[in-house]
Image (tube, rainbow over all chains, first blue to last red; front, side):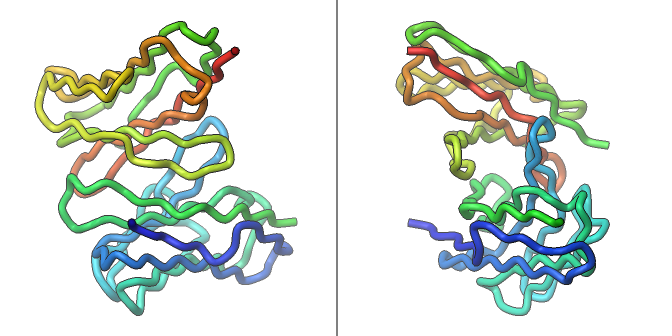
Length: 113
Length: 109
């Protein structure tokens, strides 16, 4: 069974802090994604990656960056956290074929105070 | 830009009643996937539809993909309390999945 593991379930950070959200998958998936989930807005794509050291912007990349140094790990970085980045962050992975389902991690609920 | 609208946002039903959620895309989709997210959980893949007009069933759940591949629906017959959660559609356009805003289903026993 596919396992996508996010390093923290809950995180509280202060405005201006640099925040790292880590995601690891164990199924050798080529694709990895970072979404944020907010009430009434559904899941919005922040960044995605189709290969190691490759990244592409999603719909809402502002204020975020990502790193994919190894195939199994995809990190989301908030360079200077702000209160409007308080949200649920979901990592997902999939095989490279366009019809492959997404496998999600349990999510990280980030609160920026 | 690409948008996938999903209605209704919330639905409360009595146990045993039917439930339907609808997705509409502004552009033609390559395929559409459906996910269920239980309260406190993460989205879990349910099914994928690829062909125009395709209909698939999973027990009490019926999924349809429109002829123009711009809309889709999920219908649950005779809801049960285990159906509680948020249902999301996700349409593939280009190389990216676009998620609907989700429909939160509450089932009243």
